[in-house]
Length: 359
Image (cartoon, rainbow, N blue to C red):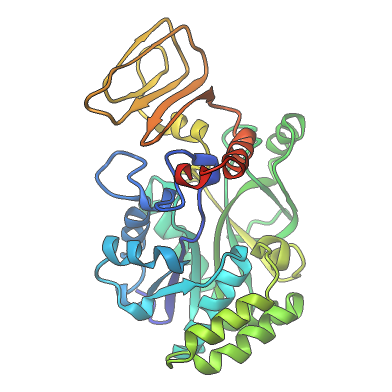
């Protein structure tokens, strides 16, 4: 294990595209999405234990979910659970954690990772990260992990790199979710990888980048860091967050900085960001249906059909490519690949009287 290595697990999202399974009260990262008896947060935490001492693994989450982190990761101290007073996207999340870690170790190297992704071939994952940590130890590079694409996926961001035989390659461009024709060109070119959202950098490097590209945010956290570890921390952090704009670390820093590199990896990865991605990685019947619970299915294919009720039977006939599910007080029937609609569903539910109970 690297003595200066710290891990930051970002667990603050609400999983809108995974509604109505993912709810405000218990978002996706706190659910056993894979049906293995462990939540995504728990499997992510365990994935990093071979790399990093457990006392140097931090989890950043919204303060209303801090109790879920304590319940699911009881070995963490209160110091290791970083509770955000409001959601301001990943830049503020990473800034808060980085300034906290700097207080303990000014030579720290940080791996920042989402807490809700699927990764297989974990030995390969750990090997790649170990090499990336070595590269980031000079406190001069911002490194992101890129996944070798296996298909022209339109649901992921892409990173283009400059051709180089070195392990880490200079980043040329970032592209958000492209149209299919462009995704196909990316795949054919050979110099694009999927953006995994997993980062490796020295604490000095990321704070310098924040100071350069998000100076107001850096100033706010520099000021509030004086209160870290005191009774005034919560108030000071709330004031800092109130001054921060909501922006991702990709937009706020990575797409602007000149010292950004990518290391290419070939382990199996999914951001589990939609019902379609869950369908892709799950066990399915001969008609390519993912089925869970007490259900009867006829003349249906390529669908997700699930219920958790022991006292109800779900019967489905004649569907292709649908999500049919019963999740507590919500029953949903829709095309599973239309992930663009889920944000609309959630917004519309918010607008109806008493809609909060369904979110």
